[in-house]
Length: 190
Image 1 (cartoon, one colour):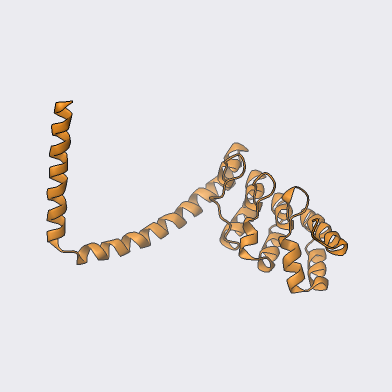
Image 2 (image 1 turned 135 degrees about the vertical axis):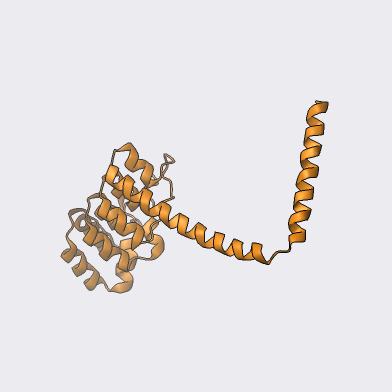
């Protein structure tokens, strides 16, 4: 907060507190009075210990505030890490706020693979804190997303395979057999 004006620092603290308590109307009033660009800057700025208003709304389970904030901040700001490396997603997962986790991932495109300073992803934090609903949602929805991406890549590979000639496959088989023979010969020598 050192590089903020006194007024901006006060607005940031107000936004952080309002986000903490889920006071959406108050946040909207500050955003409107600040203007779009100033609000975007303030909402993406880190306060004490590196927290943002999004961290506070997520940690305290306010999906409506989280959804509003992610419409204003830049996509990169969704993944801001605090002093311990925790993102808003880490805090939501740790505290078991599954609706917030869902909002951050589906609407905010939060990076669920980011690790905090302890080397933990948000899902691992949820597991450690026994937030079963969050873990179950993340397992189903994040793996499904990965499978869909992999499925699309596999489909592209299948098309390429169909276009390749059989001669290439015969050459690969021949090379594989030679490699296998060479390794069995060296294994018997040893």
